[in-house]
Image 1: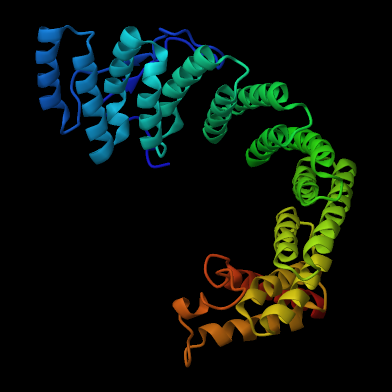
Image 2: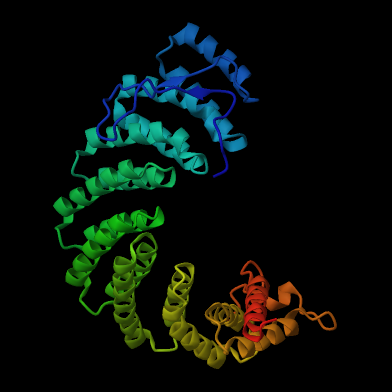
Length: 403
């Protein structure tokens, strides 16, 4: 996020924790403002607004229009968060004169401008918009469901996971009434709930959400569909991650469940796109990285070997895309004390030297054009992983020979 703390020109005060259900039409957003603003444009506009208040009254279309103009200028040229107190006053006036529907365009524009700000600044206005949409369109409306999802994403990104779940479940309930329990719209809403729990590493919830999503997608799209395949792959990753927080017995079962789900999902992708397709490569890479992060090299090894073979055929035996695979194999073999470490290290360092050799270096802009590269020479830590494997291999040799 661009804004890491409250802007110094204003502060937000909430007398009590607000719920995430309905908010009354005239509910206050809870802003407490300091009189001085840092906006360059505010002073002159406020002088003009003060004149309009004397002439037309504080609650008038003329004052609302001037405030709306100030909000627009600040959003275009400054930090949109600085416009928040002026927006609050503008929509309060407009709502009192013309009803809640009239303020939706103002809320939509400002929330769009402030999308990069911390969610705590946007939250009060999104809650206001949710309350207005509920009043105008009714609880069981697509507009309310969409707003619940938007708020749910915001809460999840800012650490409010419990609030996010309540809102996302509310959205699912609405879509079930609108489209039927077994519909593509409900499937998408349940998938968002599963993605949210996975994103914040709530593995127990994520497993339950994905089981729910899988059952629904099987009914909506068919048991051998791509949607079901991808849900199985997501489940495999969640089961593997969950194993890291469990006791040995439960951990083994989770890995077994991960292997079974991945095998089934991958088989569906292979049948649909082909065994050497990009879709299969991406699935293998994501699962490998999950296993490696969970310290499950034995489970990752056959996938690494298969992906290495696919990439060799697709991109050539000296392609940059092979480097991270060779590095992970080298680290895994070294950690296990395997004799397969040395040839993997030799090949990895030789390939790396071809790209980074001092005599004939290949610069980044050229490397980035290589097929299947995926930026492996930059940001992947390939050199560090190879060095790590080399150090482990050397220590293993020293222990073996008693040096």
